[in-house]
Length: 261
Image (cartoon, rainbow, N blue to C red; front, side):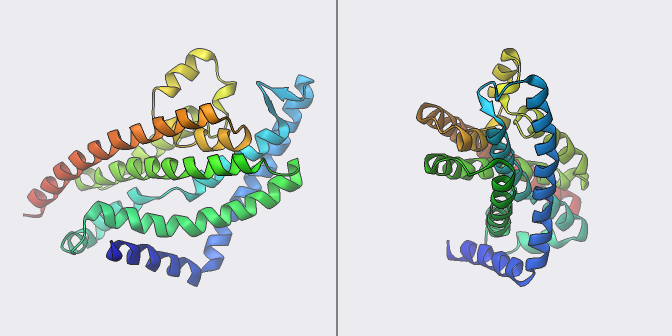
């Protein structure tokens, strides 16, 4: 376990060494919130109401803050694996005394920790200025707990896409499809509460809402029943995706060995 923690620590140190890069990427959350504040403020004025499907303007701003924090802080494992396959570094890593996927998991943890923390810091300042004080402590607690599951789900999907590089090398198109699925069915740009009932039912059968909607929704509306429901669904999907990821890794490793030979 120490060797994996060392990998995460190394990545944290790398990020600390270049704080400008981390802060620069966090500026986009401020731009995102300013744009959507204008859009949602206009929407509420036109609708002539203070809440839409139980969500106020302030709820929407804080929801979007948490959702964008997740989007900007999720691991880009597929890009790292794809680059390693292209430049041949993957052969070097596979010969190291640690598991390939666990290496990337802890590398992602170290990379995301500072980015998520910085995004939350910048996001809180901007959202507070635009919409008033943040949600209750219960909302923070439920959001942070489900944020862990959401991050693990993102890692599993990114790693699956990354393993495709063992066969096709370029994985950007797969990432684009996945990103759009999370944006729409995951509730990134619009909470599932705004969807038609039939589309909500379809979305909840997929893993995407538990990657984005779960922590963001619980952040603004901390409901114990919904929290346990979301948490159970998250870790059920984690178990499924870890199993699929293990199978995909075995197949990808064999394919890489054959091509290398």
